[in-house]
Amino acid sequence: MLRFLTAGESHGPALTVVVDGLPAGVPVDRASLDGDLRRRQGGYGRGGRMKIETDTVEVLSGVRHGKTLGSPVTLVVRNRDHENWRDVMSPDPQPPEAKRRRALKHPRPGHADLAGAMKFLTDDLRDVLERASARETTARVAAGGLARSLLQCCGVEVRSHVLRIGSAAVAGEVGWEQLAAIEDSPVRCADGGAAAAMIAEIDRCKREGDTVGGVFEVVVRGLPAGLGSFSQWDRRLDGRLAQAMMSIQAIKAVALGAGFQAGDTPGSRFHDEILYDDERGLHRGSNRAGGLEGGVSNGEELRVQAVVKPIPTLLMPLRSLDLRSKEPQTASVERSDTCVVPAAGVVGEAMVALVLADAVLEKFGGDSLTELLDHLETTRERWRQFLARRSPDPEER
Ligand SMILES: Cc1cc2nc3c(=O)[nH]c(=O)nc-3n(C[C@H](O)[C@H](O)[C@H](O)COP(=O)(O)O)c2cc1C
Image (cartoon, rainbow, N blue to C red):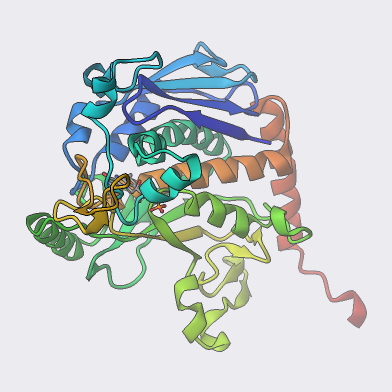
């Protein structure tokens, strides 16, 4: 239902995204889109590039007077640093010096350099890394802001926070309310003690020319039950979320709810009991499933965790080679971050919002927001009746 394509290189003129399938009437607030871009650029442990770029969104199509038109929305984020790369990134033929000036020949273990060089048969790794770079996630975050706006209209809110950086971790579950002021933490962590330990870990890695990864969690409130389907493998919402999260650069594992503990917890302590009382109605005793059962949303908070690897560009580089001569060399060093876990959480929010907006449109549909909200309200009313019904079991009558 909702599709998007990003384009653009890390040091090219701009990142662009075309989002197709949004209904008419969804509010588009540029300040809010820019706010998400700023959050993606922030987080303790980012490098010098983020100081050069102050990302802002330009809207080229699909929006009029602050609302979507139902036509494709095109968003553009200019790369300010492009000024310094005009000849290197020029689409027109250039003298050989322009290519040589920023050529990379020593592939970085863990980056896309070597795999991309073999794929495209190029020995100038710049041809590869310019697109493989996570600068591309700027466009995803911009698109995610549109999805977030649609979800907000449906009463769905998306937040994220950091659970672990290196050996520093939050103990226990973090509640929704604790996430309200998450941007006040430089590492986007709800636990002050753990945040201090995370900052110390990043500082140590930076001093040692090393990098550090971690774990973040995206939490979603207000998600209607019944999104996704178990009837076909590719309609399962868990699979769609995992694919979207795994597509983020440097994400190496994804879990729903307490999924990372599922392999070593007995069923009696893993599954969420189904309870009923007059005050709360039907409810669950816990939410280790993370809001999805059978690939379908069950009305509980959605929780998705992702493991971010330590980023590959190291100031103390690992062993590599010169792609042409095959002589041993240390890996190339580009201006780089030390830790991107807080920023990756913001990208995770965007990807989750895009998948959920798609799933909401799939179930409730409509060409305009008004129609979509009508369908949603009708279904919510049916759920209210379904869950409130306390009729005797027909078998026993
Ligand atoms: C927000 C964000 C920023 C990143 N910044 C860097 C960086 O500065 N240097 C780097 O080597 N990798 C960085 N990465 C990771 C690489 O883009 C990624 O490792 C690379 O594209 C290879 O993809 P893979 O790790 O998914 O295999 C970043 C990732 C994210 C999510």
